[in-house]
Length: 117
Image (tube, rainbow, N blue to C red; front, side, top):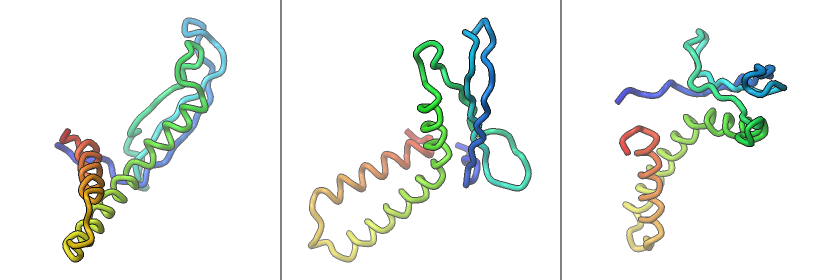
């Protein structure tokens, strides 16, 4: 498994006009780029599909923001896992089942983000 493009990731929203064969009219695309002073390509590129009752421009913007936050979210999950593990190791008498459930959820999300699921 290869590593993901380092964060932070940024978003470039670009309005465009859809071709007539694709319904015509205004549309929006979004590209998410990786960090670094040199352009390395887009991490993901997406377009709205409101013309076919699909993803709207507002939904596209929200999706792009979520995708761009992925490296930060993964880092936060790793930090939360480390903090919870530290707590569990030092205060075993204070642990209830919810701690294990939270750790399992965190581990599943990290595994999925790392492509091991």
